[in-house]
Image (cartoon, rainbow, N blue to C red):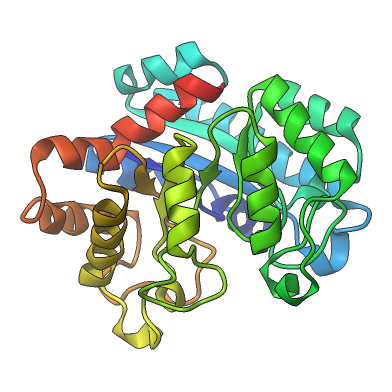
Length: 315
């Protein structure tokens, strides 16, 4: 099986703990990815908003970027076949490699209010950015600010336009509803919600309501189903593989197709994973369960084909 996972926070753990990506005790390591049969993993550089949303975010991002680049170098020195995805051609070539990575930013404060910084980060390999974490930055309001009614700022609209021009995925996970609809209006390319679930099943503010899900479907974008227990169930202690299935099934039935769903685990960034999904190795029982519910064609789309097609449209 080959899996595309649109979000994890493993880079933060590697940086803080000074451990290696090949083998560790976190939710994700490359050794277990290879044992699964191969993965394309989006590695997010998460910028903590209380400290960095209005300045200093770029410097912190450089620390995580260095961690990523050093880990890629180490893996190649160990003889690991890992493709760093930067272009449409790379996306088309992913399945010819044992392992692949895509570098992302979680929290637009990483660019310190600078389109120049955004362009430089693109040149260094960044291909996706979550516009805002759950608070407010100079791009938009996050879900914690929903009561303000704030959407994209003037600068935020420039950021979306520049990301479209460069060929970067615009990620709407964490953004407040007004900002979500501004992105739908502003973006000229398909968008992504890298790690979000269905609000109809679990009323967490980070989840997407049915209108948002349908809008991403109409936009030809993609939703990465996340494994955060508090997004799957009102009582996160009940979150399990079946919970993930229920959110997938709700979205498939709502959209009427299987072309716009994938996974965005949020591994190494979630405090309450499902009790039977404790790391990347548990994609195996998850996919085995889903295979009892859906056709091989649908499984292939959700596990990797939809993500790869999106990358070939946007990068």
